[in-house]
Image 1 (cartoon, rainbow, N blue to C red):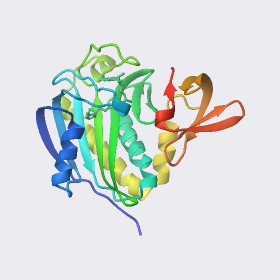
Image 2: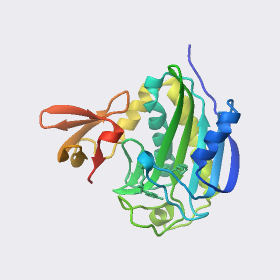
Image 3: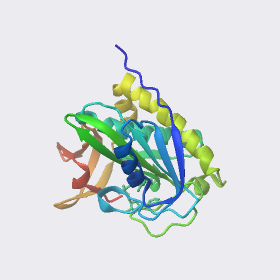
Length: 248
Ligand code: BT5
């Protein structure tokens, strides 16, 4: 039996909020059947990144959204959502003619070594299933100046030397999210294959840091549960998101 998921979007625009992910969480608690609802904000005063970090975005210039998904599949497969979302972002930016794109594990989008988009996925688990998943995406569209970050930031305007309509970028991205979400159910192996092919630093020696300090290793791929596989000398080590940071 082929499983097919056809997402229908319902877009809610917010002028200002704490964080679209927080807003989506509150909404889904009250409305469990809300797959496809998208909260989009001009401004967040508590924009979140991974591990307690902050997402910074000047008012009205960028895309800040949270999409509610109810995939109802096994917890062990949760990294596929991350991969599908990264691929949707990658493809949308590629179609807008942004060069030098890659996906930095687990799901940042880079242009060269600069960050143009970040993704924060928060899953709610029931038993062994993902009950719902809040997919938060921050994509820099028209902002041209950024405070100092862990890694240099860029935006569509900086890359394309043109300002874009944020709403048009939203619709462009939603189209790709729909395509890759559907592929997630019909051909998950293809999602893994495409994701690995676009990984930042794949096959080259890069510096990383873990609890023991800085070391050089070669990215060999990502395991089915989303751990980064790095070759260090002759051995291949698997790292979870909290265990490793990139130093390049
Ligand atoms: C992320 O975390 O990249 C996930 C960002 C998700 C943001 C979206 S916006 C809509 C939705 N609602 C939310 O509250 N969040 C989501 P992480 O990989 O931990 O990266 C965070 C780091 O990226 C920060 O510590 C900064 O160094 C850097 N950063 C912050 N704002 C940035 C920006 N606008 N562009 C590039 N880098 C940024």
